[in-house]
Amino acid sequence: MSAGALSLADQFAYGLASPICLTWELTYACNLSCVHCLSSSGRRDPRELTTGQCTAVIDELQRMQVFYVNIGGGEPTVRPDFWDLVEYATGHDVGVKFSTNGVKITPGIARRLAGRDYVDVQISLDGATAGVNDAVRGRGSYETALRAMRNLADAGFAGFKISVVMTRHNVGQLDAFKALADRFGAQLRITRLRPSGRGAGVWDELHPTAGQQRELYDWLVAHGSDVLTGDSFFHLSGYDGALPGLSLCGAGRVVCLIDPVGDVYACPFAIHPSFLAGNVRDPGGFAGVWQRSELFARLRRPQAGGACESCSAYGSCRGGCMAAKFFTGLPLDGPDPECVKGHGERALAAATAAPRPSSDHSHRTAPHRPAPHRAGERRPVPLTLSARPPVGARPPVTARPPVGAQPPVTAQPPVTARPPVTARPPVGAQPPVTARPPVTACNANPLAGFAPGR
Amino acid sequence: MACAASTKPVGFDLDAPWRLDAQVRVRPEAFGALLYHFGTRQLSFLKSPALLAVVRSLGTQPSARAACTAAGIQAGDLLKYARALETLAASRMICQRGTA
Image 1 (cartoon, chains in turn red, purple):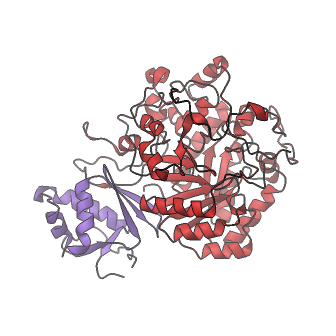
Image 2 (tube, rainbow over the protein chains, first blue to last red):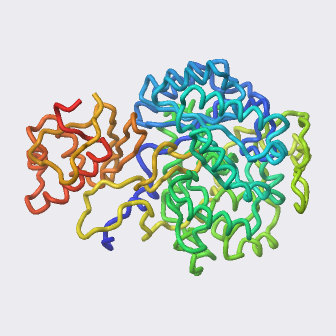
Image 3 (cartoon, each protein chain N blue to C red):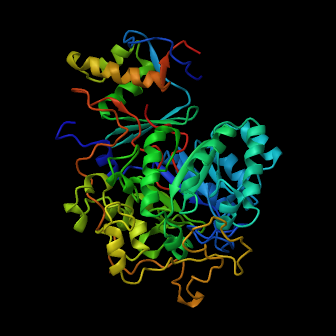
C-alpha cells in the first residue's frame, strides 16, 4: 500500500456522499419484548412517520442513490402499510432487506417474497433451541421463527438470513446455528450484543464471557466468509488480527439510523440525544441531516484514541464500539467494555453511572418468558423489565443535545493507515483497481447479500 | 439486459465494445464511485475518478480501449485499467455489448 494514498477505509472514515448502509426502523410496535431489544420496542409511537412521509423518505433515498436499506423496528411487518412500502422502495431503486421475528411470514407472503427481486429477509433468532431462544425473545418465538423459515424455504426463497445476537447462552450453539441455516438454504448472520435499549439492563448477564469471546473469534476465523457479521466483532481483532470486514466504527460515516419518528442517529445502537443528528422532517430532509449535521461532521474528523493508542492491539480493534462504551459508562477514548486485552473489565470496575437509553417504548407488562434452561449459568436472564428507569426519569425522545454540549464523539479512533481487510491486496502499482467492499456488512445490518470479497 | 456470466478464462478484451449492466447503478463519491448491482446485490468500488470516467463512457465508445483514451488514460497505464475492467466483468458489473 503506497504511503500517500488513502485506503478505502480512510476514505470511509471521512464520510461519503450518502450512507452505504442505512437502517430504518419503521415502527416501535412489536409483538415481542426481547430482553435485549436495541430500540426498547413494544408500543407504537403516535408520532411515527405516516405512509406519505415514508414514501417521501424513499424518494429522497433514491435521489441520494442509497441502493439498499435495512428495515427493522420494532416488528416492521405489523405496520399495515409495510408491504406497500417495500413495494414502493423496490420500485424506486431502493432495495430492501427487512428484519422480522417471522410473525407475518405466512406461506402466501413467503411465496410473494420469493418472487421479488431486490427484497431480502432476515429472521431473528437468538437460540438454536427453543429454550435458549425463548428465554431472550419470549415464549413461542422460536416456533414462530422456524415456521417462517420453513415457509420461506418451501416457497423457494434461497439465501434468506438467520440473524443471531451472540449471548453467553448461545455462543456454544454456533455450529447448531450454522447447521440450521444450511438446512433451510439460508445464510447465518451473527452480531454482537450491545448494551443499547433494553440491552443495557441485561448486558452484564448476557454478554459473552472472555473465554466465549475467544471461542467466537476462533469460530469466525474458521468459517470466514460463510457467515455474515455486520462487521460487528471488530473489537475481537485484538486477538490475532482483523476479521474480514470493516474494522472501523462506521457511525455517521457509512451508516446511520432513521428511527420510527424520523430521528436520525449515528448508528442503530446509539439511540440517545448525544448521537441524534436531526430529523428527516427537518427542512433539509434526510440529505440535509446526512450532509450537514454538526454531529456527523465531528464523527468524520480524525479522532483520538486516548488511552488505547499505546496498546499493541489498537491498530486492529480501533478502540471498539462507541455505543458499547457509551452505554456502559466508559469514556469514548478508552477501551471497549469487552476489550480482549482485559482493559475493559478494569475500566468497568472504575466506571461511573452509565447514561440511560433515552427512549422506551416497551410494553408496560412483560410477557411470560421461560427461564433459561442451561445449567451452570451464572445468573438467570432477568424476566422483567424492572431494570428500566422510571418513566419520569427519561429524557424526551426528541430531545436534541444541548447546543453547547459536545456530543461524546471525540474518542473515535483515528483511521489512519490501516487497509481494509477485504480490499484487494496491493499488487504493485494498481491504484485504479476496483475493490470489493471492505464491508462484508455493516454495523446495523449487513450490506447483506453483499458477499465478501473473494 | 443482464450480463451473462463471462466464459472467458483470462484476460480482458480491450478492443471489444463494452457497457454497464442494465441492473447496475453508479454513485459518484470523492474517491471514485460506488457501484451496485441490483441483481447480484454486489457492491464494488471504483477507486479513482479516472476509472469512473472510463466506466461511464464504455457504452458510447467503440471499445474499452477507446473509452480509456477518451478518459485521458496514458498508454503506460492501460494495463492496470484493463485489470480493473476485468474485475468488473468478472462480477458482472460490465459486459460486452451484444451479449444477452
